[in-house]
Length: 382
Image (cartoon, rainbow, N blue to C red):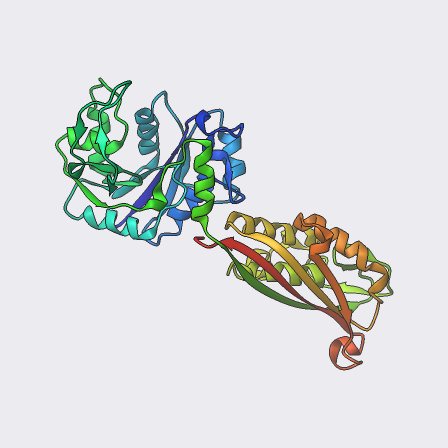
């Protein structure tokens, strides 16, 4: 398959899950279910893009949940799951294969995706499934006949299809009972659907108690450290901005933006924690739109990228290196400002100052440097 697109169905009301919002937008480990599903799929190297189907009145919720994550498009859902999927398929355009996935299954192991795509070499579709371990019987008020479980599997998503085959099956569907998944439609249209080994991580979230089980599947949090460093020259006629506040001083820092070395170091530290390049990558000095820009914007951008990547900022430790001005009188104001920008309690922000004993650029009073270290946590399966 040369081009593969993931289609996430996130158009339901999800009322049984509780929480006051449709379950696909309810948060799990600080991130909406649909965002977990997006990240699990988008990180697979074979997937070239993601399209989401959501309710026409749910787009604001989707935008809030996904933030700046790139999308091939957003399609409005229909009255049934089948109609929603068809709307998404029509919005994809040209592709070789599509993975159709329910947002209520937030975790998608890459092993499963590998198996699904491999099966498309010889089948029109492929589904992940798990064997049934419990005794199966027809029920009601009275126990009915036992069903042979050896011939039964529990079907999961994502389900993979050759794009032309699944589109044809949808367009040919004649109605009757609504299918509960897309594999039934391909099979009814004469296509073969392979079964690959599913995974307990793909369990569907339906009821309130399912969220507790999903939290357990997230595992322990992993802590990542990022570090940043910046230095700028002092010059006459410039304002001095440090740690997000303006400090009265005879000279200011010279740079393309407001040259706040403290916030620049913190920005680079956050970008480093998610391996997202450096501040120059995101805000190149050659771009005139950043001339004189407030470094607040840089730090908030980096914090947003951390959040979008599933991370949570735990702590920031900043050291400012200069002979003058004295940092002590402004330390608390800096902590307050940085805490507000990162949306952290002030106790999670450390601001320190030191000198280089009059050695080097900072020691001669020619410039100011800053070094920052941040701690970011992720769930173990991120």
